[in-house]
Length: 397
Image 1 (cartoon, helix red, strand yellow):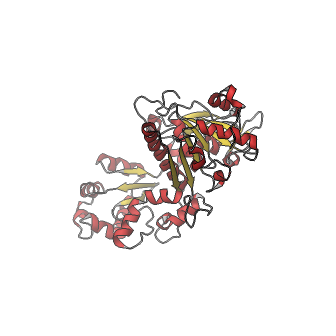
Image 2 (cartoon, rainbow, N blue to C red):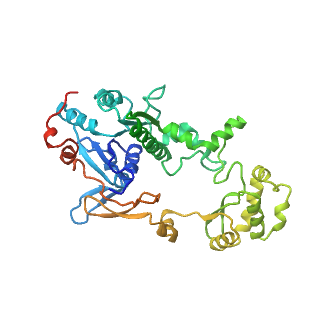
Image 3 (cartoon, rainbow, N blue to C red):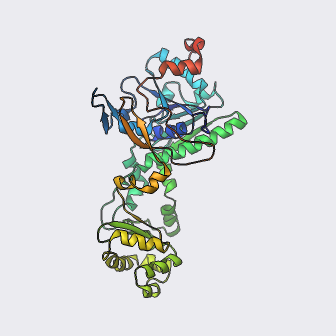
């Protein structure tokens, strides 16, 4: 990982399940030395989550979900209830540039591993805590998973069909939005620390992250005082901007301005539709989108999806098939992007995974380390970070 822009950055990840491990993996993918701190009895709970991929000969199983969030890391197993092990861990913290953790608020503080305690001997430390609701406030001790954050944040109120019940987004956006915000903030804080010698404490909540990415929805509420509602695949301020059914499958059209609206009317063979008084402007099309969708659906049902996508692409109208994951990973553009990488698991089974999805000059993503077996790098990390002479000279907490 020497070519990574974060090469040389030392990160301790006290991560479990999704948000913390995802943040740690993003840093590791960019070259940071990310050391995952786990308890010896099972480690990160994600290690037990399906799908569990089995070696056909040995029968040894390994979690594909864990693998997808923990490549390019090392694992150190530490018994946090053992004073000697805790002292050794404290020494690692003194050598770290970054700590990422997503325990419930107060857990690490009770072990003497809070930012306040650690920054006294490591002033450059950047310490990021991820949690459901933040480190303080009425909900700070409330448990959280992605689905509960989607519910309380309002996301579920705008997800689903117009007349159906609220549903959660199929991707755990609360965990991954928080992980993205955390990594972005960590990089910003380490840049400042490199200039000033002073680190920072980052309090990153899943609730805050989801509200942050819901910018268009909360702007609608703040401007109108009316909460946005469920619209299926439609858009509250734009039309036609939604999914339709062709004769043999579903696709999406996003004719989001006047020029594209003109092109769409020509593409569907109904140029007079452009000047229909119900649909002349974007505002009117959004207001009357149910009527517009009904008209377009009757036209789109007459031909195949491939025919419509070809016709729409020819006129520069943004459109796409509604793919499942089998279809998108067979797509020639995804193949061209080089997003899919082979990942060997510790049980010698190979699987595929999506690598770091952003390209930049001077950096080439690669999987340098497979997802680590629990505790595999414990002594290796202590030896590298502390040195053999210091390894047993543990400072008191």
